[in-house]
Image 1 (spheres, rainbow, N blue to C red):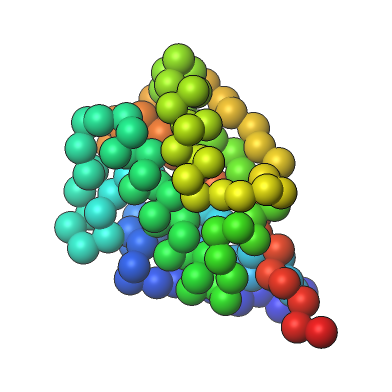
Image 2: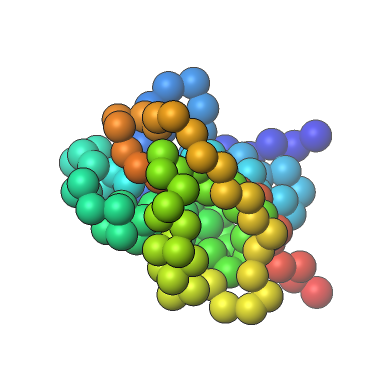
Length: 130
């Protein structure tokens, strides 16, 4: 198995023993992104919608660094500290994805790193170069 590490300064640096993403063949496994600003590594704000937009911006940067785009994601896992924000996630997600949408799971969790309200990870399949 040939694993390639994906890294970009356009998304928050990995804080710990992981990489922003790992590419194996045409699959890219993206680590969870939280709403950190890449240049300061600070949480964008306390506003849930702003946090969600920043997470999608960070995911977009990692997808592009891997040679794809956000729309190439085939699975996303959304972790939220308050599932009552699910409608907001749907509305914002529709601004970043068009059909066909990726498969998705939404999970309520007690807490997330840096006390953020949302984290998203997922899998991207790079388009074939045929």
